[in-house]
Image (cartoon, rainbow, N blue to C red; front, side, top):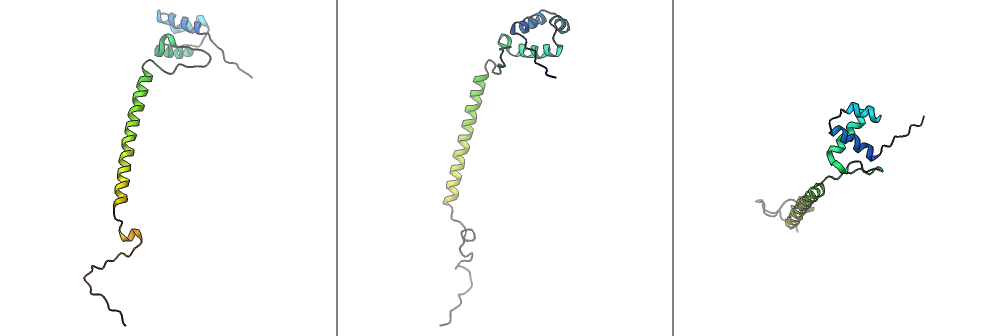
Length: 125
């Protein structure tokens, strides 16, 4: 059973939305145009979101709204600034830790020092 999707023209969708904006009920418009009321609700959501730019056709959905590119650009620039600051901080921290003298236990040397209060044992000659 091969069911093909029904493709509705942009003009049909816009006329349905204009009829609903004029006050007709969605049930009446759905019956007159022989479409599902749920489908009309999806069309209405897109119509309200982007207005006349809705229903571009050929599977190309208009996802970018007015003002959206500027908001995205500002958000990305903010993120770049934040990451730059984090990178600078981490570079400084790495340089600081590289300058520190490592304890002998970490560097592999002997852990004891010559400064202990005990007198040195003399080696037998």
